[in-house]
Length: 98
Length: 219
Image 1 (tube, rainbow over the protein chains, first blue to last red):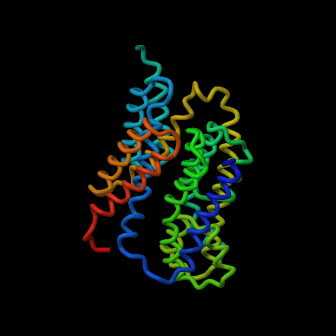
Image 2: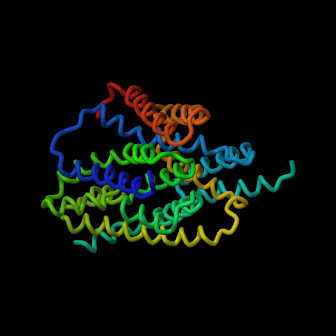
Image 3: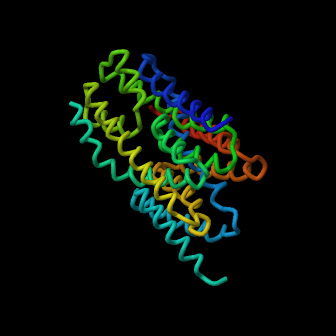
């Protein structure tokens, strides 16, 4: 699929979901509420792990930097601050010899 | 009033701007052009789905996998629409407009402020749309001045961004269990299958596990 076909598909499923809710008058079964609650948690976690290692043999440094970023995210709940902490830790750890 | 809705979103701009910057930098690193990066912000207008898509493009995922992941992430909007549609009376045309610009943030603020008019909702929605698209543009320009993205480690922004989005969502044991499970499943699957399939597989199985772990809980 080309970029623009993918973009059209993304638009269709996103706008479709948004419109369906505003038009719907029924109640969803509780199972669906619980399923949907866990979707972002599962997808976000699934996006983190495969890309954590990187392709240049810096896996250990990246995991350590990510742990510090997670700590910052947990304490402050600030996206920008967590990314900044993670990147700063990554750059600093890379400077260490060995 | 439109203006009230627009202003009610001001505190959230602080979170939207860095997220929009990060999105565009990641998209640039994934090889998307400025027009493509901006088109997703205008046409799809869904932050986490756009960042996932950028990361999946970089992994060489197929279009179908990217659309599936987008659907998985955005189907929650059905719930927002149902809740909002019950509180705010909308004509058919207003429903299409309100649906196009609907986001987690605009929904949350509209409910919290007890919005009763289409104008308030639209003000809140467009406030975020404007900020998101300006941040996207700024991020694209930022991405294009980073001369050596590999050396800087720009690709590391992607897992960091999702880690920072994930951590505040983990408030209960079941949520932590699902995150660890999905993370491990995706990591193992990604050794076998390239592209976006590991993400879709881990996402669906993780959410099913969560629904099962919380069975019998009161709504």
